Image (cartoon, rainbow, N blue to C red; front, top):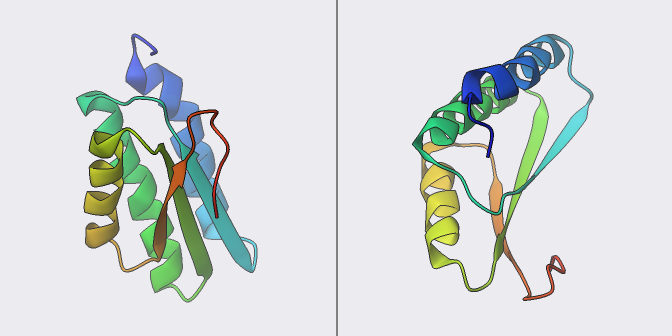
Length: 102
């Protein structure tokens, strides 16, 4: 985990904001986190806000969030974000070896 979440994710969020101004016809986002904390959850909310803005502007946006099949907290967090968005979010399990299903 980065100590300074803002410094770590700042360039990523800046790129996402720029990309959102002229996105590809279809944007597919894959989320695959082993862990995240409260600071990272705020960054994710901002990231998903940019994805939602693109979808609201008529762009095709899809989100796939993978979680370890034994990590029900991560699954629940992904489902909570999915409720907040009108953009489709697929919440998909990975097996114990990390193989993505779906």
